Image (cartoon, rainbow, N blue to C red):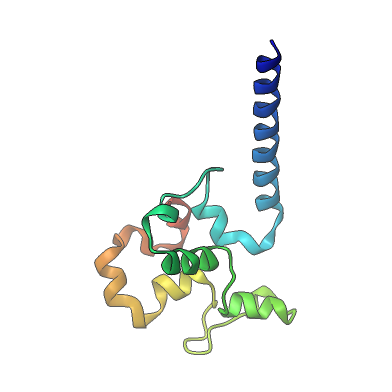
Length: 126
């Protein structure tokens, strides 16, 4: 009986933590990419599949721990619509950097289906 109560409490705590995680992501304006890529409260497969250095870089990128204009502009209280790329003068966010930025076009067209080159489809990448 005591074990059943303990298991029930653990499940309740896990459910509460998951709900809090979803709510925190929805409230934050700093998680727009993360919201689309991380849709479940569980460990992402790349955590164990990539070398540690690449895993850390990907985690940093996904959580906006980087120096793209979308983030550095936030540090300086620049309105979001003015956080532009210095090279091409478009929105300097993760989508622009990975999909639109011309320096990566060849590699992107090789590894990413053209369907996802439409920014409105970003939420489907996971």
